[in-house]
Image (cartoon, rainbow, N blue to C red; front, side, top):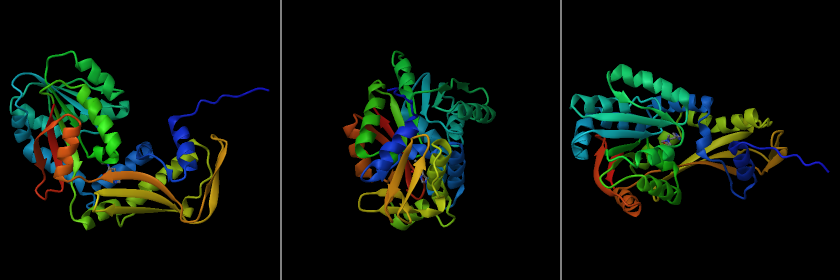
Length: 318
Ligand code: AVJ
């Protein structure tokens, strides 16, 4: 009998695994296809979604203090993990340049398109900046830099750490730490615990943009895995628990139903009101930040916060 082996994408495999699990789930990393990235840009423009404006304020107003706190004397590298469009980072680079700092900016992103846009954006705003962009894996670049004696500032902005469970965050931070030498710094965007209504509204907005962001996962399954999901048979639910700082987001099946994927050659079944967990967005307390840093082998140098104290760019030292 002939056997056929089909090599399936990570997305296909994760949909198969996540949609047959007892508690259905799909990783939030799959939000960011082209359509999803456009929806995320809409989220960042919403007044309810405070993290973007907060981190922007920190970059605009406190970059000179951040530079001072680094206590780097000569030439250094600024290595950014997941650089995006540089809208916030360009203010940091601009302030550093104006203060006379001597650095090479090394943004790393998986998307070449993102890197190209970033390069135009940064060079227009910070003329003469020494920029050496890379596409691909963060840890390949970390490995590459590890032989050099030049101090590094690593940037992990935007609050992406919030998408990681404690164990996954620890695994990531330990990998960062392993690629750093003593004295290297990590500046990480972290969303802080605050009035629960403010957090709830940011992740369950009245415009339905966050709902569309989540529903796009189903559209993506339809498109890429040739599935026949009726999007109007699913809803979106998001909830902030101020006791543990977790926002958890879900898709909700509005009826007992199934869909079929031609690519996966499989049918997936849902009960009425069954959930698909799509995202964790964890909010930290200062003690939570301290213990995370300590457990991963870092010392917290300083928390740079916006004026409302909603968000911190936390500066850590190895
Ligand atoms: C890009 C991961 C920081 O969790 O706040 C926004 C993504 N999800 N609204 C976040 C997101 C819902 C965002 N991060």
